[in-house]
Image 1: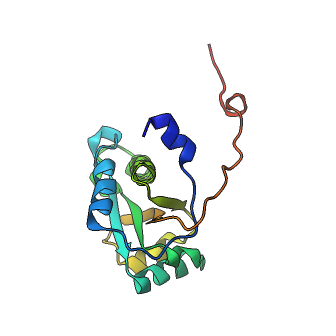
Image 2: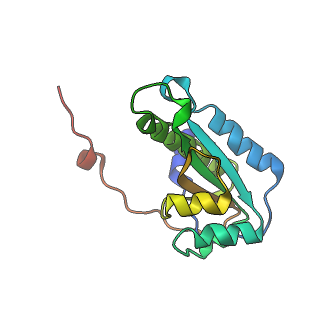
Image 3: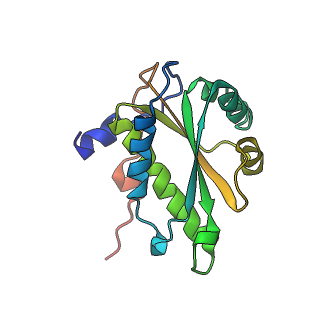
Length: 168
């Protein structure tokens, strides 16, 4: 798919078919993440692959009880790992790395014909406990994954002139 088309068709999907995802689909999304640019090439992110009805229900409960999260057959929890960064203020750089990783995962899923939704509504400590993250890994985003069971319309977007501030 052409990049401009990929951006045009990407949506935040919150209704999923119950069809499980194959290992290869998850592996392809993770392979895309592996190509992400990172600050100092420290790759200061970690990704937890979450699957199974009970684990997905727990993920939803840790996300302000957004029940639709439990409908997804899988999710990626993208975490920062500041310990990998050797610059001053490592949390800042790790947040950038994790954000880029999540963005590439989101786009890779769309490119594979999968639906996804970036979720930032959770308490990091609660989510970390639910998925038993390793010390120092701080949840930054959840990316639900699956086959769409809805076709959301395009969300309104600001015009470029509203957010771009030229300086000469």
